[in-house]
Amino acid sequence: MSIKEQGEGSRMKPRITVITLGVNDLEKAVGFYHDGLGFPTQGIIGTEFEHGAVAFFDLQNGLKLALWPRTSIAHDANVPLQSASVTEITIGHNLGSKKEVDEIMEGVGRAGAVIVRSAQDTFFGGYAGYFQDPDGHLWEVVWNPQMEPMD
Image 1 (tube, helix red, strand yellow):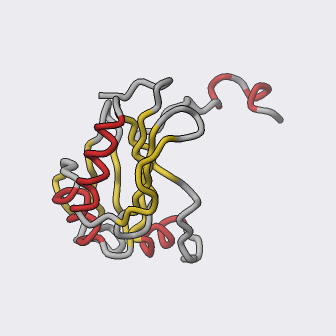
Image 2 (cartoon, helix red, strand yellow):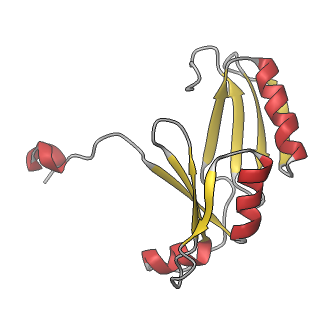
Image 3 (cartoon, one colour):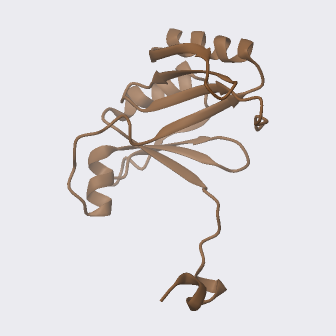
């Protein structure tokens, strides 16, 4: 039975409220995102629960970024812990100009990110570079002239 046949009530609305990144060292990851990148957080919570330690960061429009140990995600989801792959997902940070891209790339490098591709002109007429956080998650810092950045 298709979703259309099931009715409107069973359709998922196209919104995301939390993006959770699996990390190997929660304290190190929180330091990178809070101290290095300046993302606001209340710090690590849930330490009183087995597999409960997590940190949340407020992004825009109610969106949250969560950092949770990979072992805890595997336990909670009842799936085996597997090797991470850096090419499974990228997180995009869209900016308003090439200059802003260069400034952010310089800042994340000072914060300890690994710059895997310096910012450069793209095939689609924009400008972008990539960095990896301490757990290898890929971030694309991009200026796309066809896409307005979200404040």
